[in-house]
Length: 372
Image 1 (cartoon, rainbow, N blue to C red):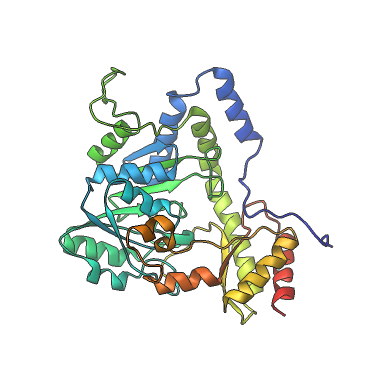
Image 2 (tube, rainbow, N blue to C red):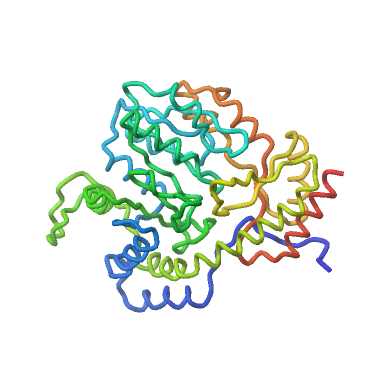
């Protein structure tokens, strides 16, 4: 019997005694930065991804920024991307004077609608920045065709879609550069913040390593700064925890999938909402669970009840074009109507490995009572 009211967070990182032990070991070592934990994490993550280079940074946002710099995108260029993402995806373009060209999303997958990309390509277009939203990969087969036909570069925002590349999960197989996030809500974390850039391009890898460390030379002279750079370094504590998390990642992904499957099984019976689209082509790396209601009023009603019952849930991803900074730059809130409509009707629900099946059942029961 579940209590009448219980506290269920939207997410909770899966940290245990092993994560605590390695963090404490680093603290006691006195070596908190520029040690061997970051190097080992990079080696292990590159091997996991089957890539030549993994460059650890302090956030996914930093990784995207360095990815842009390493590809040579610059002021006056245009890059095609999605409006349905965390704002960081486009902020990093604006920071470099690059114009984001937004293409509305597909109604089912909620990823960028690849069929609408060609009409946006022109002489200023340098690349495509797809976002694998909610852990489901964008149509990378079509993006690969566009990349080859038009001589474009691809920077993959995989901050919500981590997993070992495979035929059914071709992450990092098309992008010249791919970026992952280790923020505490993600499938794995490096002590709350962190990110990584992966690539097979040696020059890109070396440039990202230099840029994250104040433009430092690859030589051992620590005062030889050969370019303008940033302080985007990952700490030793973050890397140590990240290494443990990576070892547990597959197990945590399986746990997330089981819970997501239970949500879908229980919610499928409701005509008033849609459960996440499942692709026969690409599997999903489950980030958070979400539902799309038939209208905004019902979404808001369900959210109020869940919050009142101690169940954290959130509306997610207003179109980036709706933010104040982007409206100032001439973007219209109505430019991407599908993204706007999905935002008004969607709700993110709790999902994390330690979430209990009975807690999922409790959440669904409260949703049921809300929609009646």
